[in-house]
Image 1 (spheres, rainbow, N blue to C red):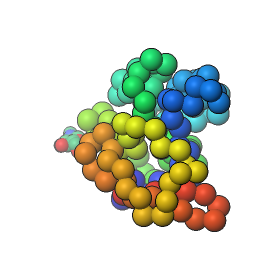
Image 2 (cartoon, rainbow, N blue to C red):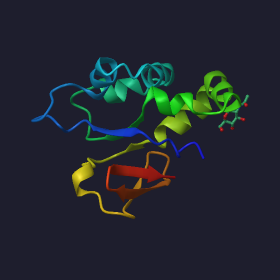
Image 3 (cartoon, rainbow, N blue to C red):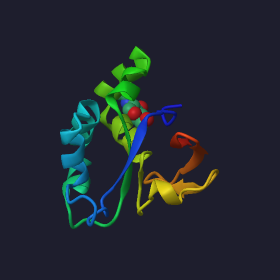
Length: 129
Ligand SMILES: *[C@@H]1O[C@H](CO)[C@@H](O)[C@H](O)[C@H]1NC(C)=O
């Protein structure tokens, strides 16, 4: 359920030639404030702020997507760091995923060992849990 956060942006740490910013810098520049705060609260920001870290891709829910969550879920996330970290790790894969190479129904394994299944739509790539 929580992985059905649409409006996610795929950010990879290995876009070096295209964009020298780290994922954390990008999130801050794009004012993705909820995600930035959550990543910082769980310590996952260190993984995403390190330009030398292994290649990871973060499927970054926008503030709009977070704002669509029911208030009881927002409450659970903001009071339970263990849960928050688990949810965030559902959105990170340990490899580079470039949206132009994703095919419909492709699956990747997230940092919790679960599957992320991608759907390709005319207006972009989205994924479901
Ligand atoms: C926090 O979330 C974890 C992971 O879902 C869960 O096991 C734990 O029971 C939760 N703690 C509280 C106080 O709700």
